[in-house]
Image (cartoon, rainbow, N blue to C red; front, side):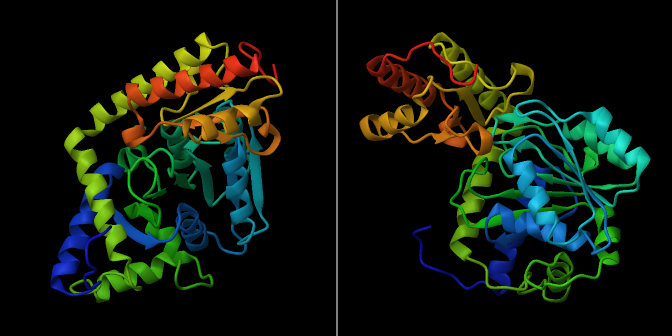
Length: 351
């Protein structure tokens, strides 16, 4: 990020950019197109929805948390024809209910969050993709908090469009959305006539094809963000995806054990728990005090709950370099210290 800038065009840049995209393909497990879009992960989700949802299009959104609700909010800007299948917070989506909806009515798009970071739970993308394929619906997956942390095989599973971002499992600064488009998704994209240019997948593909030998994107790329992303993805490939998944899984299990030893129960069951973020019920009446104590006395920043879980839970991220035994033990020791001073050990909020 601190290196001198280089031009975002020309043979040298194009070669570097294409090599970076190829690394992303390996992590997404796709032979399809991958676009590196300046913006947050939400820009990538907006791009995926805006490119596939016509004004008369019908969208099904399984939800079990805050970011599933965010998908609905985005989708409603493109069509009023939205159906949601809600599951309780911290519980996986109900595949049976989703299939019932798809059997009852034709939906063009199904959109879902892979890792619901508001609760620290994982949704069953592989099984959902099979259901969508059987009913002819394009599956869009928000993998912003799961890519590089959880197994995800886009082409083999049948995911149509998968969106991630640079700052979480890919271990680089924020600023880039990664939008992977499966080959079969283009028929849906080409059929949709909608507004927009910057976040149009058709526009990005057009420039990739027309200017691919010297400027394979329609906009100025933040070159140092792309170069940083390249470093992060090279680190992932060197570690190996399976080894990386195992490391995150082991660290998440260590954290959950440690929280239980402190009398703090994780929000979700072990079999649906994310391996990049863990949510737990906080000390009764003292969640804000816990967060403040960690920040002020130990220099540790963790998150509170969102929506109806605000003030009830706390959330700890353990992704990339933060997925280590040392990091987990440091956080657990700090939590024990703050709780000991507050006298709230073993009391859980919301239980």
